[in-house]
Image 1 (cartoon, rainbow, N blue to C red):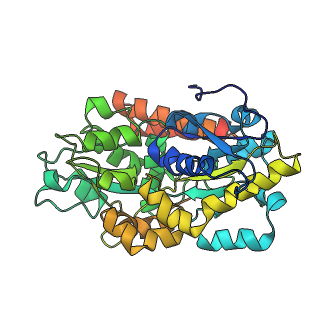
Image 2 (cartoon, rainbow, N blue to C red):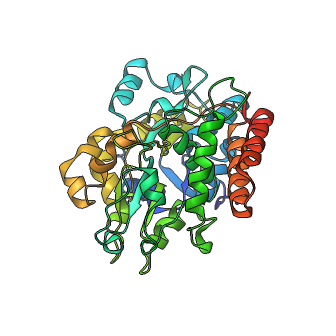
Length: 397
C-alpha cells in the first residue's frame, strides 16, 4: 500500500485533513485553506485552521480508512470503504454533529445518489463533496465523422481506424463488469445472493470486455482513470473509452480536449449502466471529544458544502462539485464544455456500490481476477466461476 505524504504532528489548534493527490482532490480544499491563512487575526470564520495532506489516488481507492483515521480529523473517502470503517469504529456519524434538518438539506442538494452513497447501517458517515460516475470519453478530432457508439454492439464494431481503450486499472475492471450487468437491466451483488450476477448477464458482459480489452493498448491495460484520460489527451489518443469516471477538467486540458457523454446502452434507446463514484468528507474520532474541535469541524464542513463554494469555487480550482446546482449552472457548463449537463442524467441514475465490511477487499480481488483473466484468455465460464467463488468467500457478509 502506498502511504500518504505526512508531516510532523500538527501544531496545537490546527486540524489535519487528508485528500487525494490530484487538483480535483486538493484544489478547492487548499484554496480555502490559503484564504483562511490570509484572514487577519480576530476575523476568522471557521474556528481552527485546517491543513490538508495528500495521498495517491490508489490510496484513496484502497487504503483502509481505519489505518488513516488516527492521524487526521477530516478524510476525503470513497463511499465503498465505509462498511469497513464503520465496523472498525473509527468515524463519527454525521447525526452526532448536525441536526436532521441540516442533513436533509444536504441530501436534497446533492447530485445523484451522492448523499445516499455515504449511508451505512442506517446512519450517514460522510457528506458528499465530489461527484462523478462512469461516462464515455471521446477525442472529437480523432473520432472524425464517427459518432460515439449508442450501444455496446456498436462499440465493439467501431472500425480499426478509431483507437479505443478500456479502463481496467485498480478496481475499474470489476466496475466495468458491473456497469455492463447494469446496462443489461440486472443489478450486481444483490444482498444475500450467492453469485455476483446471473450466468447469462455475466457471460455477456465478459464477451464485450474481452472484445474491447483486445483492442486496449498494452501500455493502458493496467491504467486507472487518470492514466487513461491523460493518454487520450495526448497527441495520438486513444480516441474512445466507453466507461471511465468523468473528469470535467479534461474537457479543456491542453490542445486535445475530451468530450464526455453517457456510456453505451445494451439495446437501442435503453438506459446505460454506470457506477457512481465521487468522494465524501468523513470525520474521524481522533479529536472530537474537544468541543472546540467539533465546532471547527462543523464550520469547515458547512463551508465546503455551501452552494456558493460548490458552484463557484470548486469548478475554477479544479474540483468537481457534489451540489446539483453546480451541475446545472450555465456558466460552469460553458466553461467546461457542457460536461456537467451532458453527464448529469448518467450521474443521477448511477448505481451505488455496497457499503458492507469486506467489500473493498472483494472489489480489489475481483478486478485483478478479471484483468488478468482477460489478458490470459481464461475461458469466460471459468472466470465467472472464480468470481462467484471469491464473492462467496469475501464479498458476501
